[in-house]
Image (tube, rainbow, N blue to C red):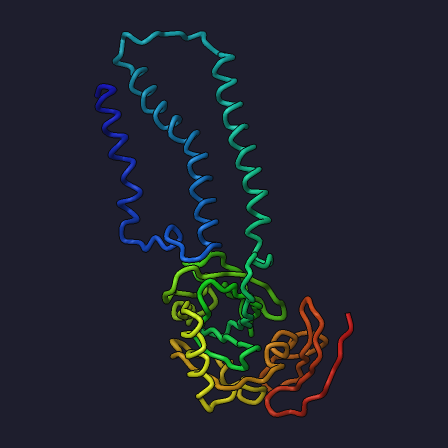
Length: 317
């Protein structure tokens, strides 16, 4: 095999990873929100920088193996060769430079893409409280006074501030087309800020194995114009069903492949009660004493679930 044939073989092998992934939806490389666009840029930049080392190493490995094969009597034979300053400089300086560049870029983008960092926008964000259940997603809109199961909607070009917790098992909230994933954990609150720059319906799911119903733990994230969002809110409010401290334990019971569900009204302390159910000696939400309060910010409210009397409680931080 001559050098020309080797070059031809390398070109063909370069397409192999793409052919292997041809059946996959490359959602991360086709983002529909600014966070996703920035993450795509970081992925491509880091990959290209690393290929500066990877590609020459692969090429030289094949070339050296061919050139210094046992049957090639024309190759220089140096049994006592042991050191080359030029080679040492290349194999150390170039990787060090690339690592320094990658480190700088990673440091900068880590802060810029911090999921807790609010997005820069002149548009007022909307707030969505997210609870991962076994095995479905509950979305509470405190400003609109509604709640939904397995369906999320928001206006396009509007930042969405997510506050995320879990009823029980740890899950991972992820909308690949829009950007970062972040974990949901019982008794703890995480935050995520996303924005959609294109109208559409995007797949969302849990990226963390959490039990037998995990594979069906999916939802739709709908980005629409302002009027479309208002119409969607009106549609949800038209539903007479209410989600409160009495009806929540029924919803929280484990179930699989749940359909989309709308609640026209929701208890204003429900999310805080779920969040604080394991704090201050509280027990599981289904029929035991729980406390609504705070995970990172002030809150007033306390509750006992499943029809038990609610008592006001105030926490001062």
